[in-house]
Length: 350
Image 1: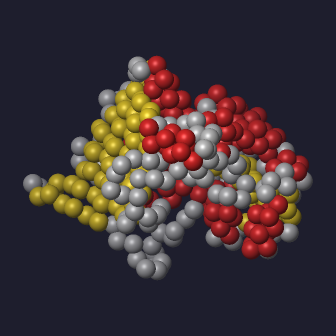
Image 2: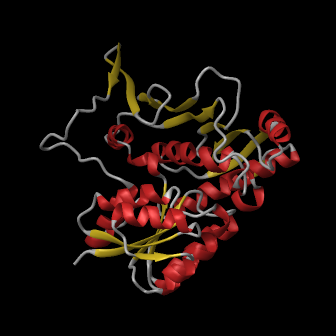
Image 3: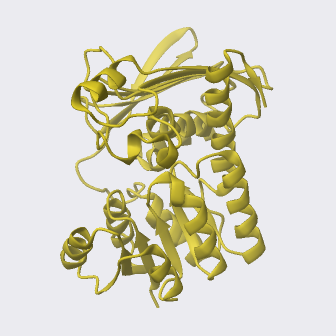
């Protein structure tokens, strides 16, 4: 019997639907969105007949064993907890919540109800990232001691004038929107070490001026930078921007340096395809290795995956899933501390 799935929020939620459709063990039976036109369009596109104009109506319908929450950030906590308490497992879009306090209450709800909560840290599931993680698990990186992770755009403020630029709905700007992905990826490569302290700074010179010129609301940063020091002595620098005077329209890159090797995961051609390289030394010789992604799946090779398909498989097989709420909480603690550090102009201890 296929697991019945519901998806709330059909902007990014469309990607959730497609992710679930790649797994034969589930079927998307219900969708919800406050935009009636979008609800009808997506429902017709994917042949989903149970359509709800409110998230609460979908959750309370009891149609779904798994629910994706892909709404504006402000509603992640409320809807996730409601779904958990109705007996559904939850896949929540990143960031997990508006802050760490909200994230913790979501984990407590999952523990109380005996249900799962996973965060959509989707960049872990790119094949180049999976390949690099295998090299790390094999010991080829050694001890990671430094990382640099960034996602920068020249002019790429999503839905400019909408909820992404509204601090009350989003919780922040590119740090909580883009930086959250590259932060998780770097932490995942580094083994999620325990954080000692962070220092951050935020700026909004470009987006604020554009908003004034176009008479649109905007209350978040357009650039955030941070430094994270771990208790094991390692460190990580982080950069996230929607608007900066750089050459590339879209630049994503994560580098990790270890005592045995180094790696890079980056986007190709300013787009959303990725490449991976690994660097090492053997018997005095320097090696550069590049991940090769075949045009089609070859027998015996790992199959492409998505966060949604992974979540379903873990539920079916009764095994732990990746990107669980505990890691989502760590990320939220770091984001909170970076914003706090930027506000007070001093490092923040965790």
